[in-house]
Length: 78
Image 1 (cartoon, rainbow, N blue to C red):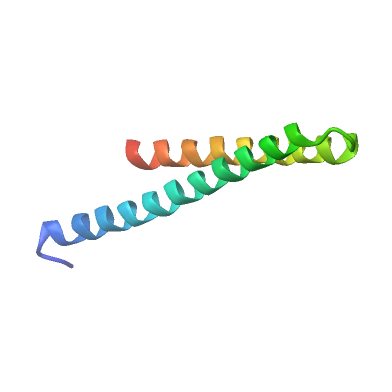
Image 2: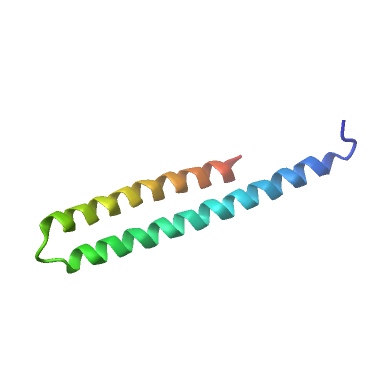
């Protein structure tokens, strides 16, 4: 039993901050990939299949970005 009531809270807060930083970094990477795929897809005019696949990749990134944002919100709400 820990007699110092702040030790566990401080450690929990530190862990939450580390996790939040990782999630935020992951979200930024997903957003950057999404932009890259969309910009590339806009530049493709002679390959409809590739253009559609890149757009689908971007949609996947958008979904993951939303999921990461939800996790960040849940983390900060607690």
